[in-house]
Length: 156
Image (tube, rainbow, N blue to C red; front, side):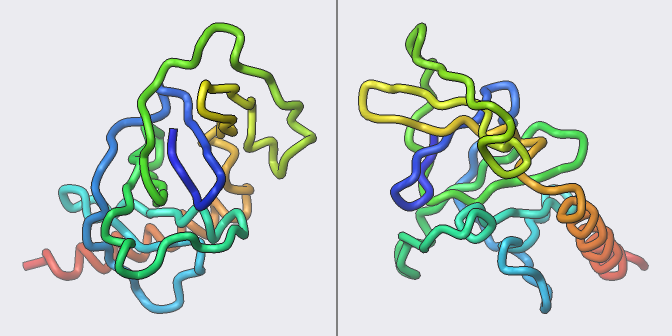
């Protein structure tokens, strides 16, 4: 479970590869606001989505607190990380706490369920539906350009 301002979200455990403290990100000019930058993971550019920007949420993190943010590295065919305010918990929801959300209730069906946890509710996100197809295509192009930039620096 993680926080985005006052919103609490969760991901299926199988979708998460790793939780990371916020490292230095490469941020080439002209990136959309929803792309926080790129994480260089062993020479592989991993795009980092700023979920609060993507979802149109007001920022709850002041600059000084930004260093305490986290990245959620997803387990996916195409590398992707999510910038979140804070990872709150790695919990297994209690039985019966998960309520499905119909796909037409959220943009692109990105919220697949709500969780009723002892300390409040959380929206469960489907990582494969966070981006629209057009946004994914644009992100693929930006990632390709970042790969070319990295390759240019390592070419001998």
